[in-house]
Amino acid sequence: MIRISNEVQTGIAGEYLVCADLTMKGFVAYPTMQGLPYDVLLDTGGRMLKVQVKTTATHKTIPQRKKDSQAYIFQIKRAGKNGDLRYTEREIDVFAVVALDTMQVGYLLNKDMPTTINIRVDAFRGSYYDEKGIQDFEKVKELNKTIKNQREISRITGISESAVSRYLQPNYKPFITQAKYMSDFVRDRDWFLNIP
Figure 1 (cartoon, rainbow, N blue to C red):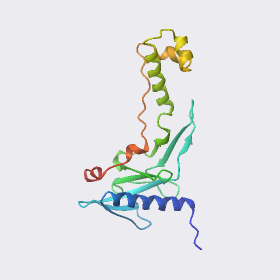
Figure 2 (cartoon, one colour):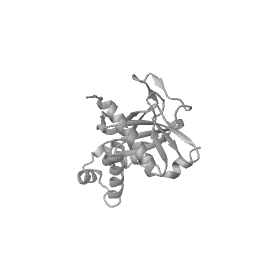
Figure 3 (cartoon, helix red, strand yellow):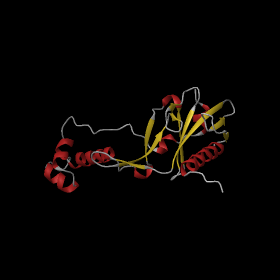
Figure 4 (cartoon, rainbow, N blue to C red):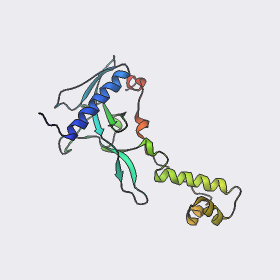
């Protein structure tokens, strides 16, 4: 009986899921042989694209100062057993990121990618610390239209008085992150056809 590590099985599952996703978009896609820098070869009908697949079984907890958050973590440009090597733009055209727990597949151009990317989990949308801050800010601003007492706003919302006071400062702007969700990277057929 052949034994394959969970890590290898996760990688294989991701590759086949990418091939299925691309096939459902109307392309020809197939896994390549081991040892190549790319995992899937995609024929768009006009060109061949080399796709490197990065797969995770589920999201991870990332410790934060205020509140831990959940994210899919992908070591994108690292190659090799210990991640000592880096993929080049000549070797890879597109990275596919796969979250097996939701069966989501996202795609990113190699040239646009950092070395590591944390992608937010759609199931937790609205619960991330910065999103909660924006929601609290909007609640306070809305209540302040009819209630001028900050202590009363704090009591109604459960938001600390210091936060209420900060939100009501004339020049206060809530922090807006550039964080993306897994669904932000789901692509349609045209995205592949328009890759420069």
